[in-house]
Amino acid sequence: MREIIFDTETTGFDPFNGDRLVEIGCIEVENYLPTGRNFHQYINPERDMPEGAFRIHGLSADYLKDFPTFSEIYTDFIDFIGDANLVAHNAIFDMKFINWELSQVGHKEIPNNRAVDTLDIARRKFPGSPNTLDALCKRFTIDNSNRVKHGALLDAELLAEVYLELMGGRQRGLALDNNVVEKFIVRGALQENEKKFHKARSYGLTEIERERHKEFIAKMPEDAVWNIIKNPQ
Image (cartoon, rainbow, N blue to C red; front, side, top):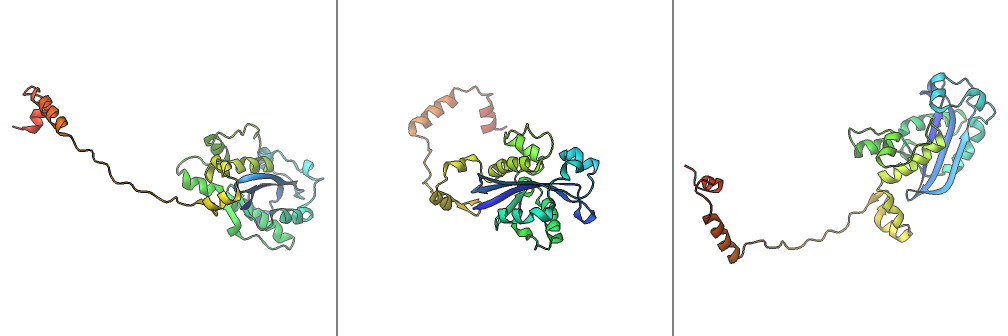
């Protein structure tokens, strides 16, 4: 099962109010494990960089001005993702920007049903707990010490590790043969193993145990709790 883990950096929160993509990072995974193939591109947004956005990812308009625009790189991006599902943390945000940019170059949008939202998965799995990417890295003891600022490729790499844990953990790596994977994995869900039931064992007392119990009770003083409960006044 081929999927693309991806992340974006932008100039803000809303492409419909003038914000643009400035970075895309993609990691290819098969059966939840990275294949080693990735796609990474800085993008010239053709506009200024708000201070708030710069503090998050550290990409200035001056730094980005010599990189290609989205219209120059989108075909490479589309070719890389193919028809795979797209996995992102808070996917609605990233998909909104990707699809807005695609609409501006006359390309059809990517259907939202191809998006897998790890934030939604984490919220369902750990309700009431912090589910930011950093919080999930801490939960799964994933080293994110290099994440001083947000970066699309680094965040996609971390998310690939988080996604593996969310979908069952590193033990999946013990069964990479296609036959084994197909036997136990169906579109990301483990098949339920056949349950085997055994007859209940008898735990009745033996006659010797019954006699010893009577002897033990007989030695109790009259004001013992056992006798008070057994013979209430």
